[in-house]
Length: 202
Image (cartoon, rainbow, N blue to C red; front, side, top):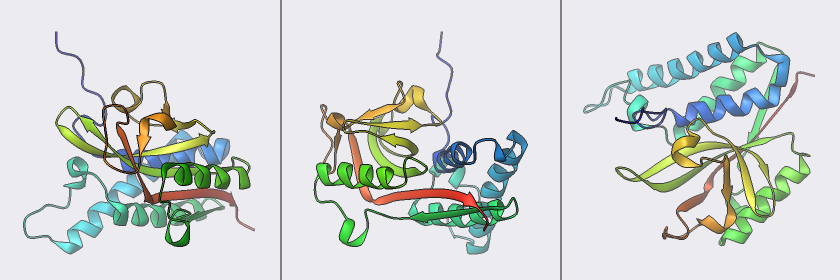
């Protein structure tokens, strides 16, 4: 009997799920499930409208559903989320802590700098990160939400744990910034890290 398909096997909506999952944990009970559903719809509409305006020659406005999202899409999704949350009396801010002078050259630098930022915000933040791994159909990229960073693990809020990280964690010993290997199957990208925080409007 064929195993059931899971979210992420056929679609590329992990970027949207990563952001909604992160916002959900940050706002706690200040948004309802219906509110989060409305946010999800706003994010899908934002990508569709942007792509429809671009009118790419060989693509369609809905290709992001199966092709996935890139770093430019994540920036659009963050701006859309900021506008949505403002209507609910909340301020969303984000930074890219591993860009520029903070860009890591080694895995230790990546891990230590990200953990340091989580420590600074006293874990009242999440990180949206991007990594590559070898999937069923070859190399795949995946956006996920990091809820907590320890010296050895990243705790995830992931939309497709059954595919990417069944226990909801990524262990440092399985990661690399260079080419993947069988012993280090997760390739991390320092320039694709967004640290996200939410606070009430002052």
